[in-house]
Length: 134
Image (tube, rainbow, N blue to C red; front, side, top):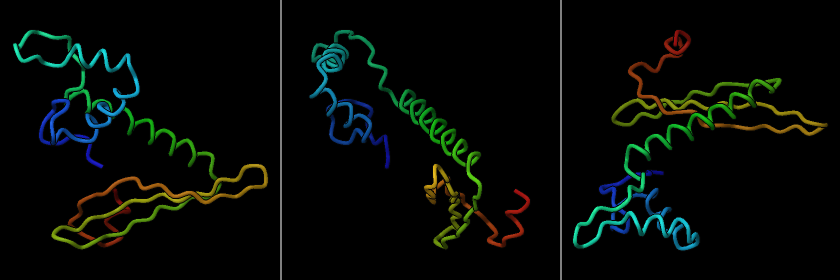
């Protein structure tokens, strides 16, 4: 799901999912609504408070969330007795390799198999021996 889009401005048509989500939350949260309304530009162009919703802040937020998700996945895999790495290529205009981790969680007589998508990689060579080196 794409966070950003063509514009970084609130209440504009193509401003992306992140800003659309902020707009939705402002309908339910009066504190955020006040903050956003004080930072919105006016017709006269007077200076307003910064709202910290720029694309650089969005990128930082995405990076922090990705780090947290990776940390949680690694923590689960470290606890798992068994795990496997699944690699699969999809030929398109470019070879796209998808990396998935599957692992077994055992807690109090309950056995669960979990699977987590890790990433897509663009690759030049689809032979398995290439990935043993990486």
